[in-house]
Length: 367
Ligand SMILES: [Ca+2]
Ligand SMILES: [Ca+2]
Image (cartoon, rainbow, N blue to C red; front, side, top):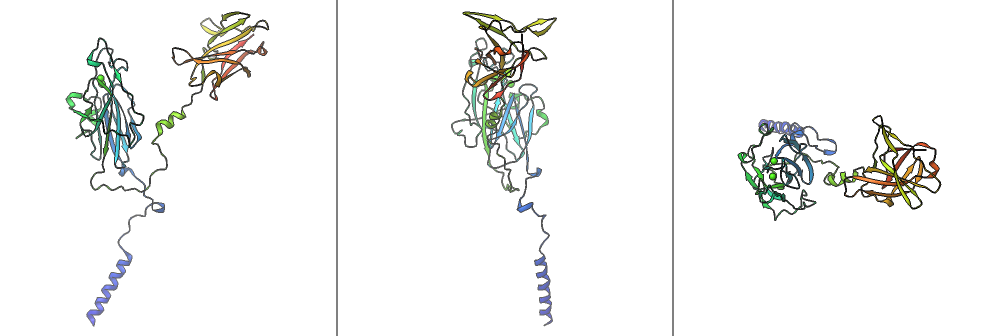
């Protein structure tokens, strides 16, 4: 009997312990959310001779800010999502027209990457060249071939099955300098296409699997989607037209065209006096004269004469021409008829609107 009592007692104590349970882990976040922390991120180191941009799972991860010298490592934190598709565009310093650098020299490329999970560049990566030159190393008469770069080369589902394997190069081949030695690239190989000298824009792709025993420790991902950020950012570019000005007052740049009967003459509306640009008041002349401002500016973009309007001194002014100069050099020309009602107004502001975007103001002076 005594033994049985003890046994019951022991069972009761054990039962109480079980009910209490082992020490509980700290409670997760609200609603069971577990957020990623810095312990979950990996360091990515990349070095390109001379420049690179890296996409991970279709998202822009890092762009080398220094296109040319000094040669530099780009090092960022990456929150891994496996499988991890890494797509890299690397460029050697080479003139797009000749493939040469410093005018007459053939430079070499090279790219290397290491991720702290052990992912490293090697011949297991795919590589494809998109800019070769100078062909046959002909420096005297340099010719190049540019191959169009596919729009979605960085996408996870891009088909690179026809691409060749990257070629590995030794450190002696590439001779990395800059801050390369102070970063961890242990186990990584320099890669490029099969021509380290003449291939100047090379895209690499590789998909890394999760390391053995890897477990994603967080269960909540962000709501934002930056997969298409490149196109999104393009849409956000503010292309307001711009009128060139020549002095601190905002005096416009251009000239006048006066139409009198069948005659057409050119006049200036600005001159340099004592080293400073000053306005020449515009004489609108007899009633039958038509006086046009011919102004220079930029950022016309895709706007046309039909989609461009102008005001002078707040008055709608017929804009008879808006177009980019040919050959295109970024400069646009605007021809605007000066309304005769502006006679005697003195300094007036010229503003143009293209594709519903308004320019800066430029001044002219009307006698
Ligand atoms: Ca080259
Ligand atoms: Ca180079």
